[in-house]
Length: 247
Image (cartoon, rainbow, N blue to C red; front, top):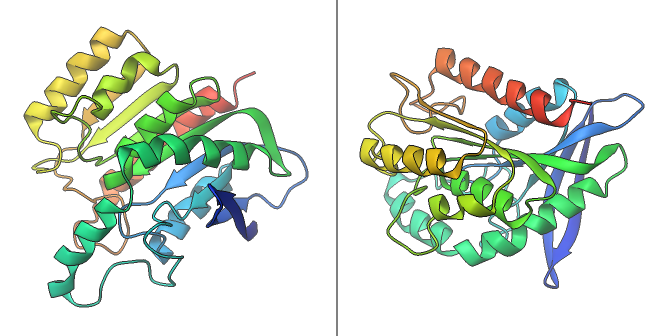
């Protein structure tokens, strides 16, 4: 497998990213992989590597670049007492407007790389970036063919620019894998999202993973649920194969 650390600019600022793709000759469908709020950690890289093993070119940008450059262990503080403060700073460093501007830049950069199939891409977001995946699909409707969110939070809010209100701008096929007992995406909010999806009349699937708590897909976390994480991975590969590899 080919793994590269790259840099490009957004608004004059330098943004780091990892690009992983099969060690084969040819071109591969491109996917933007957005980590959870703690940034690029070894577990996330392992997840992206598995996706690349399936025949995709996977770009993992440092989506929290306004907060910090990539750190070897991500942005999660070692001390539990510091987590609340760090969370507030991380959330504040990536606004909805930032997602709208950064998303197309990530897609364009990915599609310009050697060995990446042109024209269309997919995106997946986890936790905080589930909403980012939705906004990216809305901001780049002619290039984002598929978008997935796993244990995505704040997909439904009271704000006028709530992610679920972006659906009319989206042409992509969407997939949502929800956690149970998730304070960032309650059962009522899931119901609101699913009604909005039905009204949208696009291609989508939305399901709640029984017994899977928020963050269940990331190996090493105390909420990691291997059985449901494997199912989520299979659903993700199925989504991208159906939309990005079809003739």
